[in-house]
Image 1 (spheres, helix red, strand yellow):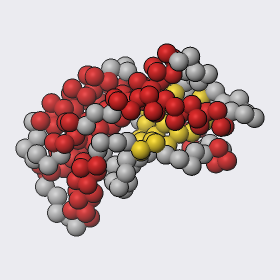
Image 2: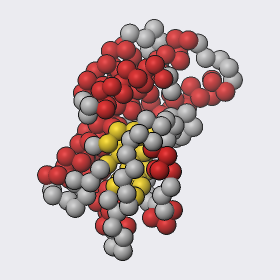
Image 3: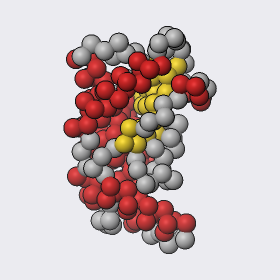
Length: 197
């Protein structure tokens, strides 16, 4: 992940301004000389918000029988190694350790780890291109133009995935689900950056 590119997007993600994050990343990707990652422009996860809400709800009910968890965290797969199926993992914590030092998120109870991931749909073509990119990277056959296009596509997909989680939380509020007012952290596995919604 290109840190400079991520910082341009992170500013908007921290404000929960997902549409601006998507717009900036889209414009940057359109300006890239290499067009291999343009499919990312057309991916839209928004229609999955309701099913994601119920996936979170199912997990929360399952783990909260005996414990009183107060914080949830959802992470998206690592772009650099997990290209076969992009998905979300979910974790629960008893206490909110805050954003200043997110190392506390590494210490979750493996007993309550969700065995079922939430798959992101509609991005199969892009997953395949990311897989080819990783093969080229491993063979040292990348161009600067290809790297830039890849990195902006990564930022765009990340922004769209974060937005999906935000929409799922809005749906939870609409349904008045028990976890709807809990802190919910969002991040990706290959990055320490997190937001709390």
